[in-house]
Image (tube, rainbow, N blue to C red; front, side):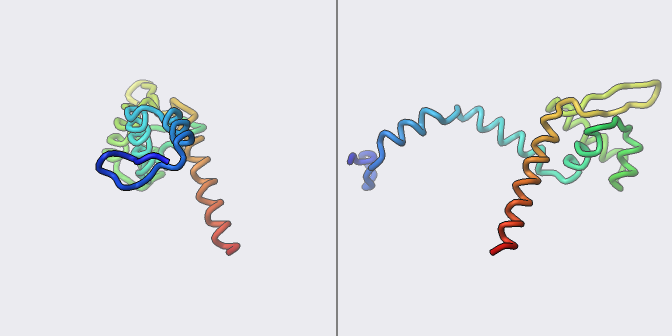
Length: 126
């Protein structure tokens, strides 16, 4: 047993475990980047856009109609998603078509959905 620090009254019991865990932790910058990534998925519209374009490319008009939001709102979200390289655009004449740039984006949604469903299933059983 070892005191935690000079101003702390607690005692550290598992020093080796703490060293192992501390060594396995990533730098704070990595966790901040991960936090920023999760912010992308904290918006219902962005999640729906990513799901909508996972297999097909769609234009702003199509997405606007599909999601029931303005074209301006879709364009705003696309700018945000492009900033994080999750979507790509392809201009054909005057039309701009958007598609998924990183298939891992929908994998995150898929896995999160399965976690959510697993928690719901577990809650229903108990």
